[in-house]
Structure formats: C-alpha cells, structure tokens
Length: 486
Image 1 (cartoon, rainbow, N blue to C red):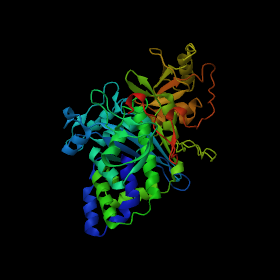
Image 2 (image 1 turned 45 degrees about the horizontal axis):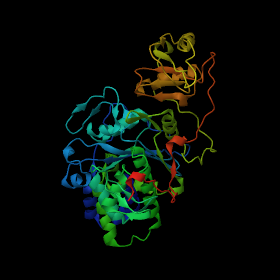
Image 3 (image 1 turned 90 degrees about the vertical axis):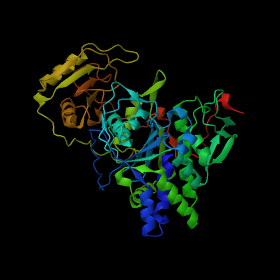
C-alpha cells in the first residue's frame, strides 16, 4: 500500500511539475508529521568506506476511519473517528551501496512494549505501556512517530523516514497505476457467513486489480491460507513486488494528463516526516530506490510464534534485525564481500567498577535443563575483571541460544560493550532491549561450561522462518482456503 506511493514518487514526481506554482501545489498536498515521538534515539549507521550509509524507511498503512470515504472503504462503523491503528507496518532497508533492498513486515498483532510518546501538536504524553500490547496501537499514541519509536526500541535499527497512507490513499494510488497483476490458485471470495471479510472476489489464475479491488487484496485475511495476518502479509508482498515490476516495465507513461493525475494522487495519498515533505525530497529518495533491480529486492515477514491469539518475535527475528542493522543483504548475494569491523559505540563507558551488571542463566534449551550455577560463575568472572557491581540474578528462568549483553537505552550502550569486551563476547551480541532495566548479561546455551567464552561461528543467512520472497518472482500465487472458494 505504501510502496505504491514511494514507487510512484520514483517514476512520476520528478517529471510531473509544469511550473513553480504547480510544484507548490503538489507540495501543499503532502501531509507531514514528526518522525520520532519517543525519548530514546538510535544512532545512525557508520558510513562505509565510500561514505555511504543505508536508508531505513518505515512504511505504515493506517486503518483510520476519519472521513466518509475511509469509513465506506474500511467498514467497521463503530470505529468511526476512533484512534487509528497501524495495521500494516513494513521496514524498507536500502543498502548503503544501493545494490539491494530488504523489507520486513511486522504482523499487526505482534506483542511489543510501546515506549512513552509525546504528541508534538498538543503536548499530550502517552505513557509507556505496562507490559506488552499489539503493535498496531502505537499509531494512536500521538501519530506515526510513535510507531517509529516502537520499531526502534524493538529492533535497534535507526529509522530515517516514514511514509503513511490510509484506505482512500491506497484506492486512489491503485487507480492511478492502472492495474497490478496478482495470482490465486483457486476462485476466491473473501466473505464469511456473518459478513466479515474484505469482499475480494477473483477467479483462479492471474487478474489485474486496481482501485477498491486492490485495497481488498491488501486487506484480505479470510480466504488466504490460514486466515491470519501472516498470510495477509504474504499477499501484500506479492502485490508490492508485482507493482514494482509493472511500473519498471511500463516506461510509456507519456500522457501529460496521466502524469499529472499520478502526481496528484501520489502527493495527496501521503503523510511523511519532515525529511520527505516536498516533491524534491521525495524525488531524491525515489531516485535512490530506482537503483535496485527487482531481483535484489527481498520481502520477508518478521519470524514469530503464537502467544494465544497474538504473536511475538522469535530468536530468528533478532537474527533478521541484526542483518539489517549490519547492512547484510537478505538475498545472500553479498555474503562473500569482506565484512567491516564491528562498530564501537560513540557512548563512552563508565569505569568498570561503576558499571552495574546483572547476570542471568539462560542455558536452558528445549532438550536440556539449565546448567547449574552459570549466573554466579560468570558474575564472579566479571568481579575478577573489576566489575565489582556484577550480581547473579537467580529469580527467573531464561533461555537463549547464544550469550548476549542487553541494555535498555542509548546511554548504557558503551557500558554494555565494555562488559562484552571484558569477556571477549563479540559486539554483534550486544543488543538494545526494552526487556531489561540495566546492563544485563544472559549466559546462553553456547556457554554452558568453562570460564572462557568462545563465540559460535557467525551465521549471516536469512532465517527460513522469514519466508523470503524475491522481487523478481513472477510465479508466486496465493493459496486459497477451500472454505472461501466459489
């Protein structure tokens, strides 16, 4: 849904203006909001040898029913005028060298901790959530800037921009594009006996969809595979990939009226951060996105597991986030490149004896009981190294495949890295996490015995649980649940 707006900026906005007044008119169409409403910031990546840095853009689909048009398209009359939900969230990562692009979708019902956010318009403070709640509620905590803050807290990934679009924006953009090919492996009608569903009705095979039908495809849950948000994310990936291929192949957008209409719809559909609030800024961004060929685009879904009717990130999710943080392509085609050194924090560490460290025993696995006394043993090692405030936490039960050092906020990153350095734990195992209140060392299943830590061999492969889809795959077809065929 959001990709259409960004891609159209790629192909349209740079050539659509016919004069300064029209340029100002298009700029006036674009809505803007603050980038990050949270208190904590994540440092931008260090430039590579060529001085290039990656770009991370959060794409948000809002279910706002704040206008008659959005109400008509979205249904659910009881939610009219209520807080909007970020029902589609995708992080687009453009590599520093502009050779590849990765996209991570987060299911809307992922359980996360939403940080404290402050609405810049009225100064209203939304306290951090007590415990975990669905990630889509972050949009109602002051705007898209809180969704950005939530992503940064969870992933440790610096986010440069966001692009948001609502129901009406999706329809207008899809109409302007002129049709995108999608495929289903059986006839589908997304409608339950009690009236739920998107209403999507397609015949088996490939169909070109646009307008309201495109919105139906992007919103369909009932009828695709198991009827979950995970299946919906897969359908969205197929649509976005197809749209990219369609726009790149259709280089004959020569009609001035068509170009003007596309420019109007693209700019009206968007809410962006101040860094993207003009046609010129959008065009500059889109010019960067154009450099990536479809075969170097990888769509993924954040690996997750069910918690009741909701989901939570798994260890594979952290692997995926790390690959993005370290600018490693998810398609695996640059793993032979020489890896750069691990990035040291710009935050200076306190003296060793001033760093409070909590040590947890996370050696329990699915098949092995926790190794006894590991928290106390490693806390003792730290004390021998001069970390006199290291203590063993024996009040809980944890399980981690590998040893990690976690810290809650940017001002403790240097301290966390210093702890890792003292025990020869790689900096890639130092992670920011809202699940801890201070520097916390979790002794993982890779360190069940001994006093010398030996880091396992790095694994830079994209987890299979991310269900990667290549942007050049034009054979992908959504599986239809037999209960929704006709």
